[in-house]
Amino acid sequence: MVDRAHLLAYRTGALTDAELERAFRIAGPAGGALLDLPEIARWRPESATRLEFDALSVAQLVTDRPAPLRVLRDGRELAAR
Image (cartoon, one colour):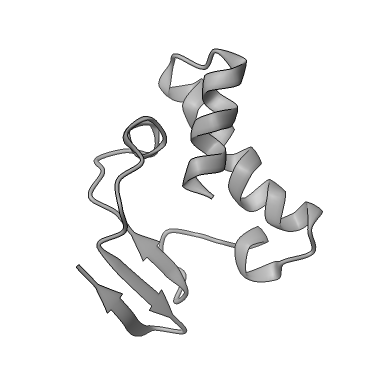
């Protein structure tokens, strides 16, 4: 999802935080809705199933594409760095 958001931002010339956040929403929650994937479509930062990154903002996440620090599935940690 983060890689897709990065590519979308790059190809559309997204530069501002708002444009980068829009690319994230299109690649993430909107893409999940399009593909009928409810866990992605209804994602929120406090969701029990999520990836955690070392990024101060969504814009930084999209531009830097860091590896996840933790992977959580239904609140259980599956992997950590």
